[in-house]
Image 1 (cartoon, rainbow, N blue to C red):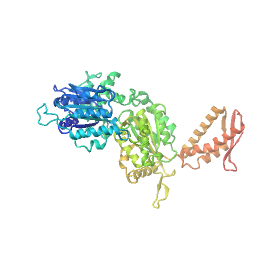
Image 2: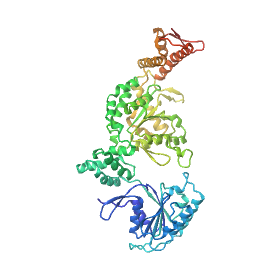
Image 3: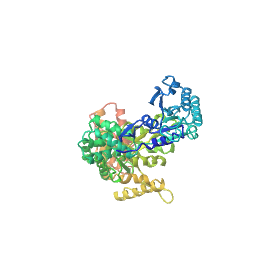
Image 4: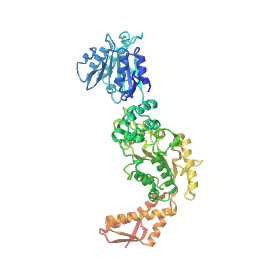
Length: 604
């Protein structure tokens, strides 16, 4: 197996003769594949990877300073420079400046100093105190005045410098005036590993899994490809850690993708692959239809998506590694028709309860700056330490149904965040950490297309209950497409939702009458539980209730529920409150409006 050293490591090898100080930033806490002379490839940490290059170039010593642990000899032999540290575990800023100066002016075989956790020198807002400013100013001066240490041991004509490595988590953690404005200080970016590097690591580490020895070459390659796809955008540690977890949990080679999910989420049992989940979805049409009445088309669409999701085929036509969310639905249509209720019912169907249901009212995110509430404020801004409501929730519980209610009311810049989620299944929070959405089901809701502006700018009805379902569907879809393409100029967002758009029909009269019975039954059940009363409604009173509740269905089931509250619940509550004692049954003989226009009941 042949491979080259990582490109960033080869860059360091190249510039040792021209830059006495290097800021190494990015994916610095990872493992890196480094080839040995015998052709083997070994995963190494940053220190050992650097040591190999430095010793090859003739450096006598690599010192490593870790706050709290002090200065140690990481490679080579101690050339005496470490004595400047005096054996202390933590150096003050002036002491560290003395050590940097001693390394920079060392005579003899070149030496190098690795300063770990340099990001901690600055505050979260990028500021530095006077002591650190003095340290960096002296280090900058050392970089500008450094002289080559001597002739290279490998016979090169270039003269290497004594080198100071500042190891930082992010490229801009150290001040700009120190890094960018100093020509003798070079920034070396360490990226996340590309697919070929992860593939090499996968081939190495998957040999340890159950079934690897008996598998064919084709099966081993397929498993390695699965692991590479499942760790897209993740460090090499994720590849190696997945193999360790698979060995520990006895997950065989054929299920390496399950091991990758367990590594990412910390949960070995994947609810999406649970046989009980499949059984619930297989029998789910009845449950969803009972939760949301009169929306058979929406129920079937949701079940199709759930079936694809549990089989791991959602988005299969687009290729890629399956890092996208488990599914995406866009519920559109009139108000009060069951969009939110269907999202809750889907959560119960998949996860057995509503604990994994998360809802965001996107009308609260209409301002551009409100995106910080979702993903967290960037360093230096108020609320940075609190994290984002969305990213923190998904990080804590990755298996979720997330509802973004009234998505059309969110600021367009916030909508841009969803492009990354829908395409790559990940989102970067305010702290720079990546949150994965590959085990979430995303549901957006909108009333867009029910009301539109006419040529004069007046708001008019675009669809009505007098239209059949097909016409309602067509008109709403056209209005949604117009909204994304012209109004907010985000057609790519609609493209990523794809066929996930589901248009709900109006609540028709027969469905509304059915809902009236459901709501009235719930009131009767509560009366029975709370007061031991049996509720009865006389035929004449029921006719009045039905006439009022079904007179205007523009507000859907929510309007029917509101009518039951105002005509039944409120008057009964007043009657019970004033009466002070209960009877076996209460019969509503009539509903009437009192002198103040408030509904009252005649009860026997």
